Image (cartoon, rainbow, N blue to C red):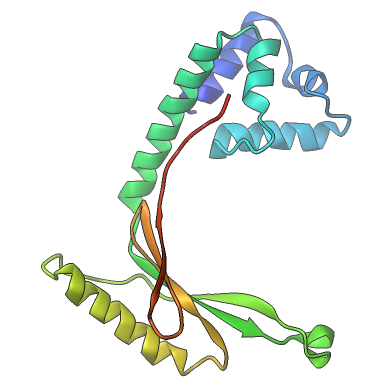
Length: 178
């Protein structure tokens, strides 16, 4: 259990509040959905609905303590993900499937390639050369590709078009607006 989940559970025990009651106080009429959102928040640290400030207020947790627990949990999660990370590529392509395809409409798909293996001695130019060659060999398998993404490190990914022109560099940044 991460630091955020521990803090919330300790506060629930301290105030003798059940999770179901907290979920009701957060405004959920569908309690199953509310419990799922609370568990998702604790497990993934993803908080698109900005529940943390509400939880802090309801459980009388000082905001700086909630933020510290969230930060500790995020650092722990990030370190775990970094250890498990392997460089990877995915190709985006248009596909025509089923009824919508018959109408000429399409959707986009992603094809994940197996993780890339480097011996650690390649320069970044040699590394990208291997990546671009790999894309070109796979591009022939798809009728209509939109380019590809290459995630080089845990927090760094690159988006290329069909001509292997760099479109965007993404750097992972964590932030939480209170």
